[in-house]
Image (cartoon, rainbow, N blue to C red; front, side, top):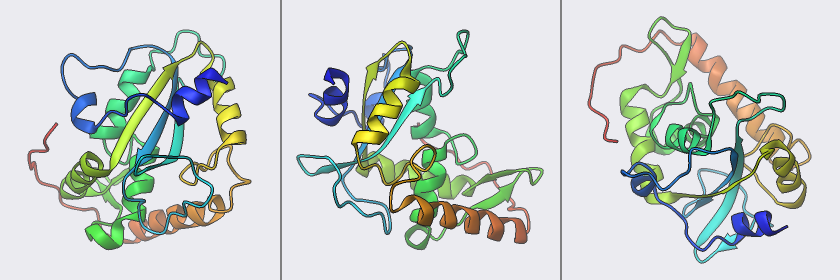
Length: 201
């Protein structure tokens, strides 16, 4: 319960700038993390969600993400940095945010490269970087078996941006439908011609 409290009422919430700074404040250890948002993305419902000051907890995650990976190199630092500066192919959270914000950004999900990967293109991912800098804040707790803590979190909290293991949430079905539709549309569009625009870290 203390670890859940540490995630729902953290003493500090870290911005994108803080997580990507050096030295990084996030430990390279196993654990769970929570994301609080200033502006809920798109049509995300917030009824029943935990709030802190003017921020709302909408998503929780863990690293590593599966039982039985004793030698996993996944850790909190790598995962949070991937969410903050990776792309929609490697971050479920970024893909969800980008889909929910597509009407605002005008950058839908697209096939890129050889056509297997899907991102929001360089400019769309840059939009997400900027949006997350302004709106997305994270906290974390270390845990030797984070998948056990994840189960407790999803059973006790309203986390509308979680789909996996969260099927009982009223928004999970709609979010899953939106993601499938975005993927379907991306497959129907030609591969996006990306350029090497510089993204800020």
